Length: 602
Ligand code: 1PR
Image (cartoon, rainbow, N blue to C red; front, top):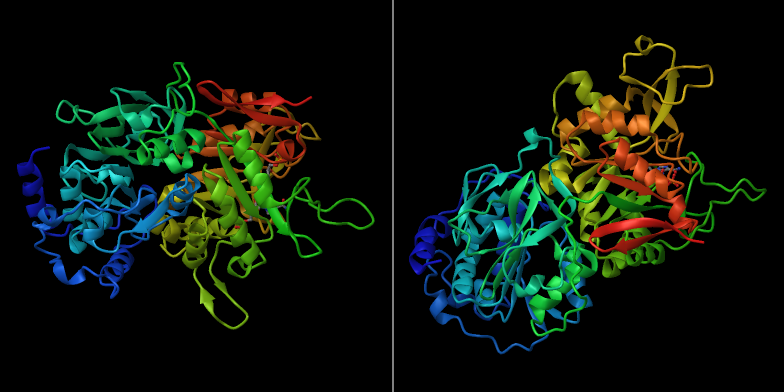
């Protein structure tokens, strides 16, 4: 990039803030006002020794004043403006033996020895923060000087000229190109969530360990390779089309995927950025993997047992009590230990479901938050948490919005939150009024944190029918007829952990929550839960064909073949299982370029 180009962009983009818009389609977003408050308050912090020397609006001399830091080699400077879950990245950096210095002022950027910019949130509010605080100017100067930089996700996109996300919105303009949305009309599911392979187009040091292994993506917008930006592009990924997976020029790197969520391979990317001389950890695996992999998710249903300990439990059609005289809650182990174990084994994601969340208040449930905090210290794949996400008034009359509940979960290390009962009420209301109130937990959280951060967990029960006309809900022809020879069934949604049936079908619910902003559907099936007889293929097919967001098939896995069956017969993007892992009947294993296979343990 030429000096002229950067100067020109600064005149328009750094000098004049972009309009708001509150787009929210990738990573995690916080409304513009909050972002600004967070950053401005950090910037004007009285302890800043340099604050008097910086002119926020006219800071073009910053580059001249930049001095190479004498900071010690173990320090990494992090530009975190407080949106979404940067905890995992912090944990990953610390896990690799480095310390973090947070950016408080633009000069912290200029004085950084190495800078990581985990852009989170939507493009417009992020640019607004960068413009208004002078951070954008400092970033341009830092990158122009070819100093060690790693942008992640939005941290890559912001380097481009502009984005269509609630835009057009001007970016930093360092790399030619416009960031656009994936086109779901050609059959791909948006957001692009999951593990995909990248094609390395030129030597890029930080990608040296990757080979053909997959890395974790979660985004709805992407930059495309072109003749104008070819000198920057170091790898591409195919999802519908080839998009830019990483850029590199000199010491400046940026990746669209999340290294902090990409397990060992992601940690190696961070390690090679932080310490370019580090030994290669593994010989890159060879292979031709080029597709988005189907995900295997380990699920931990968590609740307090009768002694008051938080334990992993597992239901049999949602009944989690032992059928003994004591009638105790089944105790399958400690949540943090099991999550760590499944991560090491190779799970693509780990989910925690607080199964008594519908009656307990999650912010009063501090052990659950502690579980998340501890789990995220050692688990470097996406963590989802669900249970009790809704508005709540406590015993003292203090009102907590579902946004506050979700924010606490995100701060504690969750990448996604999962909403059960409250999403059913929201969908019922929406179908009744045909109006999106914008007030449901689902709508609010997806508006603020992006729809990729919101999973809706559906708990349906199969109801057999002689004739599809017998109900107003969508039914399907079933593979195995009902007890009285019924050829059809509809799937009735429930709330409160399956205790209460509602007058809405899984099909209607799935379509409604997609419209309301869900980014993914976790599709349980009470009839199959804990039975080990396989997923309900009829149900998974019905729902995964009905929506264009990813669907996670859940309930019933009891053998390796059940995973292959659900992936070959339906359009599910992922399969979630619990009992089969807890009982150690199978385990996960990484196999070359293919992410994970499930192998019987003898
Ligand atoms: O309604 O927002 O508080 O969320 C409560 C969440 O807790 C929902 O996601 C709901 O599915 C879950 N939940 C509530 N009660 C139970 C229970 O078991 N008594 N667990 C429960 C649901 C279902 C799966 C399970 C799979 C795989 N668990 O997640 O892990 O069925 O099991 P399998 O492989 O052993 O067959 P809210």
